[in-house]
Image (cartoon, rainbow, N blue to C red; front, side):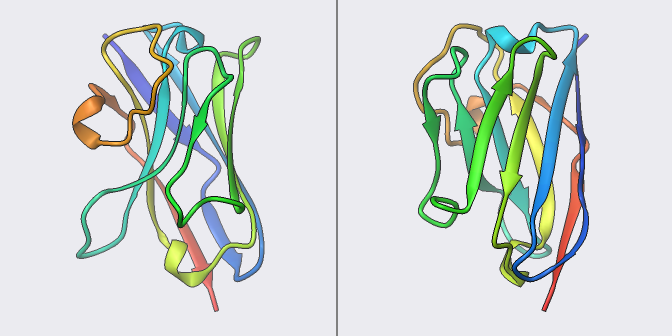
Amino acid sequence: QVQVVESGGGLVQAGGSLRLSCAASGRTLSNYATGWFRQAPGKEREFVAAIGWSGRNQFYPDSAKGRFTISRDKAKNTVSLQMNRLKPDDTAIYYCAVPSAPWTDYNLSGPSDYAYWGQGTQVTVSS
């Protein structure tokens, strides 16, 4: 059984930073691509960032480029999302997701690309 767990959400003022972390049990996360998504109330789940299993390739939508950085710590078996210059529009529940197949290094930007999801962590950016 695979369990994905996010941590690091919270309340921050606009312009501030937060670092989210993702860990998984039942999978060696270092062997899997990992993605971050977010969902605000009344909106669809939105792609935020993804990293290939090797850690060499990262993928972002335009809304995250230059502000968010996804990285992998193979020793700790975790994936982090560093979020800088946060805006009130970034307020959402942030989810970490892992696909069913390992060794993927191309962009997985759709929710259907992922099989395992965490419960999410709330990020609130005040103006």
